[in-house]
Length: 118
Ligand SMILES: [Zn+2]
Image 1 (cartoon, rainbow, N blue to C red):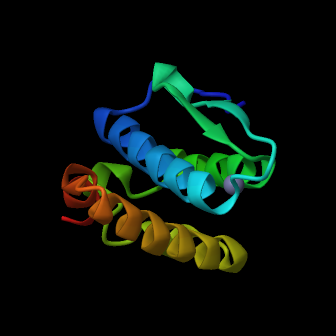
Image 2 (cartoon, rainbow, N blue to C red; image 1 turned 90 degrees about the horizontal axis):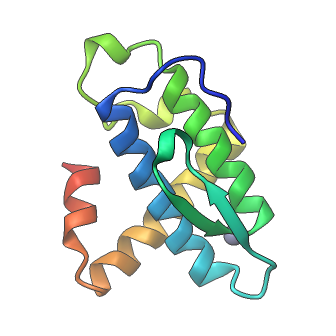
């Protein structure tokens, strides 16, 4: 569970929802044999069903997003979001993005792709 010190911004909430969706798509496709449980997103942003590995990754990603020191200067993390990840998580997020991007594209969920990459 992620403790929130203060209210999150609209942009943070949007980014958290997107990364949550991406991780869930990845987990559904890659870890369907694992035991998966509900993961609550912060600030009432809903729930995602994830395996323990993906849940801990998502928690990390959300924490990084909430702690972003550049929050005031930019509208979103899309140009730098991966720069604040440690090496292992960086490799993981790239894998997740590639997989989820492909899957959502095949399902015609261009709305997600559009929001995330543009
Ligand atoms: Zn998983």
